[in-house]
Length: 225
Image 1: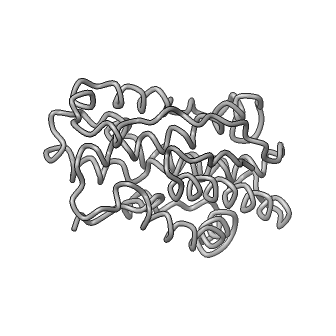
Image 2: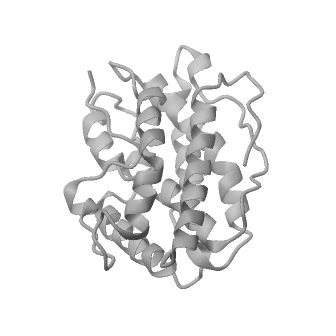
Image 3: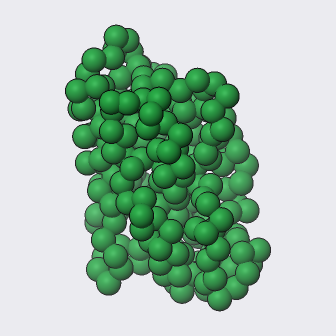
């Protein structure tokens, strides 16, 4: 069985972030604790959680992430504070990376079209507008690619000639980028109320991805936060 990388699992060097409090305290520890059960469930139901990963599983994984990310990213573009502050580093265009991988020639040669990208289920995200809530949502989005470098190393030969661009993107700067994100998050979330609001945002983002992962592409799974 492929040793699967969980949604927000990272190498030890990435996990060692010191935002001023220990990992068991503060915003980062609270977010991890609030989403631990959801994290474990998602680890079991995502398309890459099969015993022998094939290219069709990777494409299904990407299509699912696209359905999840598109409404979130559209909603986040409405803000310019908190995790969307212009002073923070530019975020990776994950949708563009996903689209490039789904459109690659190796993907178009798949024999089973049912496993390739289904039409996107774009819906409007209606989460809370506070910066704290958005920090929680972005914690899940940013964390969703942290295992990409590990998965890329494990799958690049197996799924060749597909380039696995989504997994490969930003591998060299992944740790530094995550550390910068956590420092900014911790600086903004320094009261119990803001930390609780961030945990609610993270839980909502996880719940939507879980809903999509449990829902066939043909079903009307359209409820969003």
